[in-house]
Image (cartoon, rainbow over all chains, first blue to last red):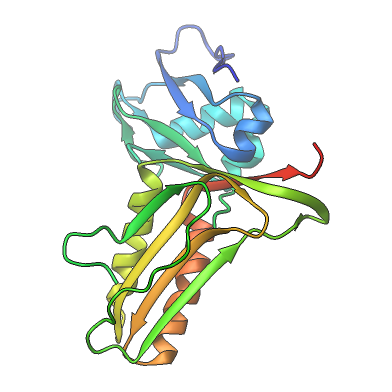
Length: 105
Length: 133
């Protein structure tokens, strides 16, 4: 499967940073790709100027990648191999993954 | 149970081999062993194997955190977990959990809690390999 890049449908003037999100299991199957790249709006002065948060990433995924909606709504974002809350800032060199519908054991 | 320095979590390629019991944990009145075996059907369809996808190092980290948390429970002396990665045929073992506890009841509770939490939190996925596909 090839990675997928999604173009932002929002305002072309809003600054964004591309975030690569690794996908696994049913989420990867739904998109037909092991990862997806989304343009995430950078934070405002109030929310963290120039920074990308997990919450903003989640919103960008819901907006830009409809096929992943059920997985984003029920799953969790992991940053640097640990579950992260919406307020967690994502540094440019950190690995991000969507963890949804796990089923080991 | 693990000797000093031995990891309490192992991700193993393919099916797990036979369990080789180690020395009993000091103070343990119960040594509990659970093995998850690949069944011959998934959602009503006959299968020939399960393919396990494991997101490392997060899976090992989460399993380790889970073990650490449950070891804080009263009477739980040791926990060790193994999980397969890749293809595991029907009838083979894909998951093994060892719990040593002072008494039976807390060991069984910890074992049950571990498996429930693992199925909820640990980034491991399985895909059915349909028979004859």
